[in-house]
Length: 228
Image (cartoon, rainbow, N blue to C red; front, side, top):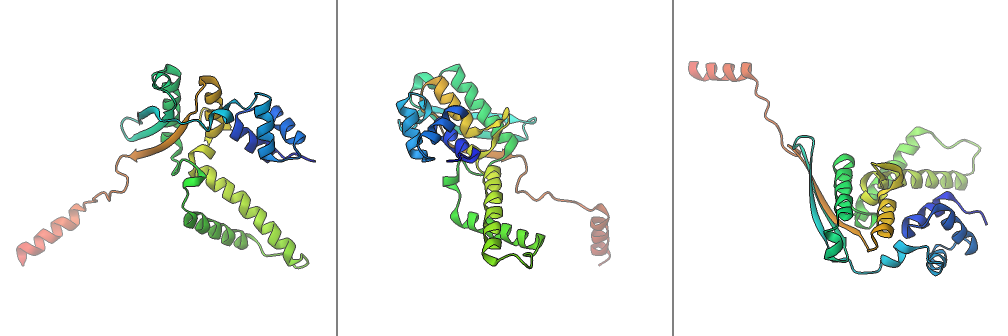
């Protein structure tokens, strides 16, 4: 059976295995992702996948300040042992993640955190946008048009999740990988389960209404009160 790049990418994200290994694993297991993961584990390839089930209760709350103090990030990155948490490689990883959050402004760690109502609303918005971009061709059957709409919406929703979910975003230092894939590589290198648990991003003045004084209006008001 044909193996799509989307399937290969999904398997690579879950296991940290190489592209060719993922393609072979899917081919050997008729495209079944779970079976492919087991196949990679049996071959000793899916190092990250084997470690993903282990408890990660140590780690760091890492702080990062960017742009002269105008953007700040706090991120909790978990690992399995205090020894790794004190390791320079792990701390550099935390900094890379914090820098990425500062630059890319995700709203969630992963898709699992996205409010279903927010996702449903975005899907509705995308459907309306697609409908405004063009009507169904007159001779096209409705069922085929509906299928086209669904594929378009699914594609746009993938883009939306990439924009709001940290793990789905292209990593700022290597946009050929997502943040999830970068973490999987780090798991293989460092040798422990590593997870981003939560983060907060602060932008100076965000949410505040800056007062705009109009000197002329202020003088006119004071004059009127004085002449009152």
